[in-house]
Image (cartoon, rainbow, N blue to C red; front, side, top):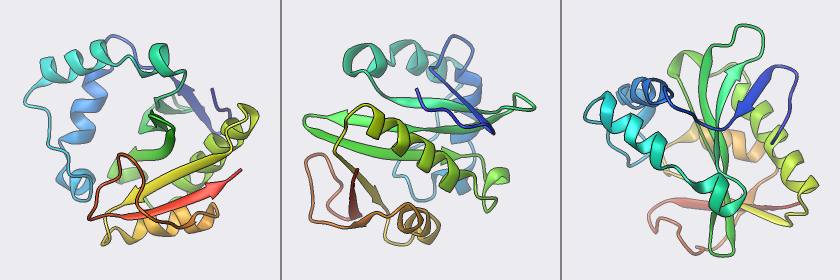
Length: 160
């Protein structure tokens, strides 16, 4: 799993549904995702219980904690769909515009390179300029649609 002195990356566990419920309850956070809020805390906990990406594919979206305070910042990580590996991140709005996403993306890409992953993709809503800026900062470049990408979203890739 990635490492960074400012953050703790960890797999989700029982009780983390609270964090995901709160994260997805903020309309600012979901504005560019296409996701919907969880109906209630039990639905979020069920999602956590059923999240099998790490066990099935060796990677997934990690819960992110501030290393100093232990507070949950959001989640980020890699998702494998077929032969495609994509980078994704979602942070609480109070953590935006502080450089977290860029530092976290660098840590994840460093880990991916250690795992001998050669190419990582990403996609974002065309109006999500903040995500677009983060991807540029970590050297992603525009690319053609890929398996599992949203046809309406902008796509990018980076070779490691």
